Length: 456
Length: 66
Image 1 (cartoon, rainbow over the protein chains, first blue to last red):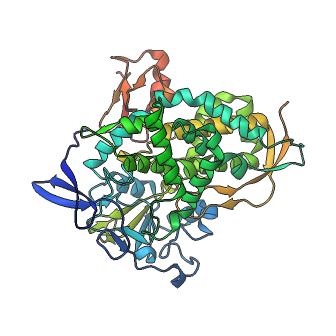
Image 2 (cartoon, rainbow over the protein chains, first blue to last red; image 1 turned 90 degrees about the horizontal axis):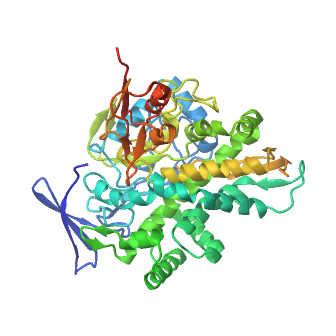
Image 3 (cartoon, rainbow over the protein chains, first blue to last red; image 1 turned 180 degrees about the vertical axis):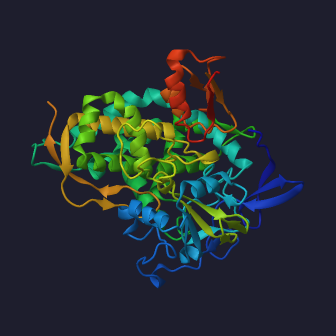
């Protein structure tokens, strides 16, 4: 916890860019904050066109997490790679990407912030250029920050998500879940089919964060639409996601309203927190809000959906949770282990030999914590869901300095969402094909379940 | 039995506080703190082992006496 850095910020008059000058090892380096179109030193367009590649034939040499067959079959892919003696897969896609699969290799990279940078954590067609440093004052701190700046940015947000701040939200989250169940209308056992992803899981994290931010309850549907537009647009080309979108405008209105009517909530917290003796500027507060939305919503939604997908197929686990609610302590962690939704990414910071792999600066590295969670060298019988697994050092929330900032909130939402669903519907089963997400967040996007019993 | 917490390794996963609140607390940043001094009472040995064996960062270790 000794991270400190000397830095100053200024606006470059010629370009209008915000520049941060950082003193490191006696040397001052200028970084430019934010993003800009292709062809500058802020963003590099990766030489990759998905149309040049077909479906993945051999994941050892042509791994692609964005192949539509990957997420539905991911545990099988990891198992085959491990058993085939391939601890680190590779592909030429995305300009070159490495994929550690074992607990050992995933853990080693997560802890090695010297050789692997977090400057971009989502694999795509663009990566930050040499002079782009989107942290600590840029758009997405601290997830895209490295030491020593990472710790400064992270400590701003940690108190807002500490366990004792999150715990009191339980009744509110329970009420939100019950409301969503009520809104499903009349259910006829044995006949009614609901979509547990769309009608339930999807709405929980967005409603909860909206409430924590102190946004008006009557704006719930509007806010949800804005957020889903942003999530849908994550895969667009870099540089095309300019400001002025509906969500940005809405968030600025909320910031203005909080300035006029101060109250005790997360938006006010972000507006009042100080970095280097100064309050954050509105666009930075807005950027942090967007990060909290993007990082917290489809991840938690995926975890809830996967857990319900499991229970729909395993009535014995479902029954155990009903008969013995205390087992949730262990079941919750087992859902997180077996169905961890989040795969992160790193960029190689400098050329290095990793377990015999010749990694080059700016190569992508995918960091599949969900694969590490199914490594038999760490977990006994890893592909079996054991509802009361007592020893469970899973890495669903990552390892090392980037441990998911929202993990306490995510865990609480997941627990309450499962409890309320199984309490209302003591029996349900799959009612058709499940549609899985594509990309680094793994979870059901459509999940039809037939309700077999409704609680009185 | 004694419990040791390596504060440098702790990343605030909150597993120990959830499993053994008699032995661990968390600060305003969510970092774990050991709240038992010296020997762990016998009735808390299982909880201490549970907390240690669930820490994702291997920040908790246990020394059995004798």
